[in-house]
Amino acid sequence: MGSSTVQPPPQAQTQTQTQAHDQQQQDPQLPVPESRHQKWAHAYETFLLSNASKLANMESTIRSLSYLATGQMQNVEIVTETLYSMLQILGLYHDRIINNALQKLARKKSGALLGDPQALRPSMHNRYTQWAMNKSSVYKVLAVALTLLRNTELLWEMVGKHGFAVTILGTRISVGKTSGTDEAARDKNRWRTVLWIEAIKAALRLGLLAASHGRTVLSSPIPGRDVDTARIVRDRRGNFKVLDEDEVAEYQQREQQREMRRLAMDAEELAADDARELEEEEQKEEEERRRRNKGKGAWWRMPRVGLGLPDNPAAEDVDEFLERKVLSAEDVRGPEGLVRRLSPVGVAAEVIHLMRPLVYAFLVYQFSLQRRRRQQQQGQGQGVVKRVYGSWTPWVVGILMEYGARRLALKELRDQGLTKLESEEFKQRAGDYGWWLLRGGMYENWTR
Image (tube, rainbow, N blue to C red; front, side, top):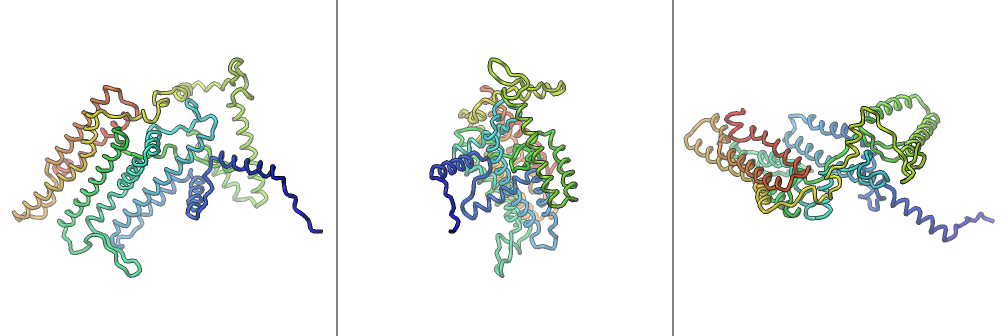
């Protein structure tokens, strides 16, 4: 008689499938992929999160490869800028992966509530931009397109000036004029490319202004990286967690000592060491759970509400402890209230601010053509031709537009009271005034 396999009853099979489905729904890790491309993306995201603590060093190391390109390579500056732009875009993809993982981890944690010092709360910028992208697909497309263009604009400018040619399988592919063009013509092509870039950016920003229903357009319209990747680690059981800032150095030192110790172990010793470390982690988590548990296992339980009394912080950490506990207006305000709708006057001020780069680039291009044409007619030398961008008119018009838009917008917003996110945005715009020392007539006639 052959051995027969005992089949579980249908009710047990259904219960097992339901439990597996519920466990998969509660799992904060990435969803199980289906297609081949999803499997590749899932494998890459898992690898990235498993090595998140080393992500900053990995990105810096890969970015430094652009410096290894030799000058003998054709179009070496375009090749290096292409590599740098690709790495910038890859960094944006990494930010998206990390933010999604942190959101799932925050939803999983039962203590991830407002006021909890251990909560994984996103920044105000990420809260607003994520809300805007989820609310409007138009905003999402425009924001991603603007971010990609901002990270590749220097590459397009270089291609517009020098042109680009590459030979693939015996086929020569060229973009722009790569030979037989003098410096004046190349510079003219460069500024035409800049004008196209600024025109597209202005159109995208105006689209963001409309898609957000008249709200201030932030300098970065997409969510960024909130948490230092050195704080994201994976424990022995494969679960992700975020360390406190004061635990990062201790964790890194402990991991280095662990790697040094494990170099001298064989397979059986490594297995025993992994089991011991897993047991130690479980004990620490159990102690932490008991210490933070609400009334269960706490050293004293409040009789009316039944909650455990937490440990008192050290005397030197009282101020920091209170700052973490206190909620601001932005913590309880909805993401749509972090950046409020502008009045018609405020919208006009925002439009002036968004159009300023295009107007400035257009004036620089026009006045440079006039100066170059005048110098060629007078037969002046090459040393004078380098001063074609020394006109003060574009510089004065540009900074007046910037200053006027700022004063008009702040006058409207201060009547209602600036939110913290709006205040941070206008502080960043105020810091950008320093760039006017390196532009146009100011740089050509004074700074340089």
